[in-house]
Length: 474
Image 1 (cartoon, rainbow, N blue to C red):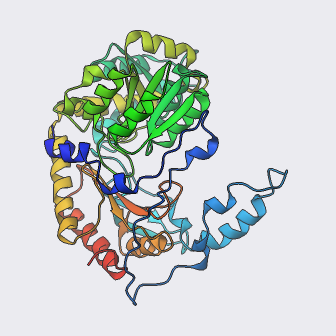
Image 2 (image 1 turned 120 degrees about the vertical axis):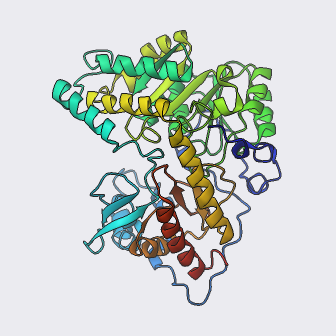
Image 3 (image 1 turned 45 degrees about the vertical axis):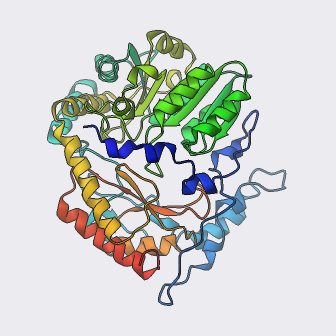
């Protein structure tokens, strides 16, 4: 259902927001270099939180990060492996082990996770890490559809979509997504990442311009790199800066933004962006990885909430978030999809999605259509959690969505907090550079329609208690 308060004019137009004041000086690059995969780093960093005397000190290994091992002066590409390995031997047990922890259950609201530091399996953890926003990945109807497809099609597609990998299930999903999004056609990709790369690099060429929000996902940045187009970045959600960038471009132009930003949880000002794009003759790609199937009266995404579905040129999304599966899509004009069939290399030269996965996605899409109450339950849960965090004065940035960043801004001690939260029964991901800028570390909380109020309260209580111990909130 539509959530007007989530896309308020204050969120869309506040050029004096904290991000606007502290935004990095977004330099132009033509063409973009591979180092731009890392997010911009603010020059005017927010102050670090007050550290109470009882808060544990950070391990020495946390004085370093991936930045120190990105490049070196040696002619040998392997020269950095040994020093990185030495650092990693200390850094992994000091906190980095919290990434890639093996989960032993479905990504439900409670999970069992193996602690690779101690070897212990921690059971019944409240799960805020998985972005299974509607709780569909383990629904009985979805699992049954997957089982039936496995009996008929086996495990994998065993071929590219343009060769032998396209099944009747894939065709049904392609038509289903186009119908759901209200577009003429769509293309199915093996991942959401490859959908962005395939759309941007498949369409744009050397000498063209791609203009992206500075917080754009790595898949958008990699698409820009592979396209060899000139790259421009505008300050996050700053339409005035987007216009300034477009004023200085000539020729083919593509603007790329996200509906909901994956690490900040805020919404792009799509109507204002559309207006600027039309003024300067730019096409617009909106990546709705974290908003498709959730926003709008029918779940079509942020573009439906704003009422601008027909004014966006390229719709991109993923199946791994709200539908709880895998893969991605590009939807739009029939001629666009026909063109990308020939020029989107990540689709052409990858194996097609497993028919087993596609069958589950078809059933999940059906449930999204038939059960709008899932979206209502999600937004009720989001409101409840926001109330708990606001009461405790937990900093959550400018998020207005089901993605709630708990802003720590203490890179050295983020893992120490994460370990304590983990061992006290809550599974939530710490996020540090290079996933976000330096001194912008956080925990990313994902809320699901499947969470009970009791689980939300239990998880919030643990997180708030640890944050208070470390001086993040009063």
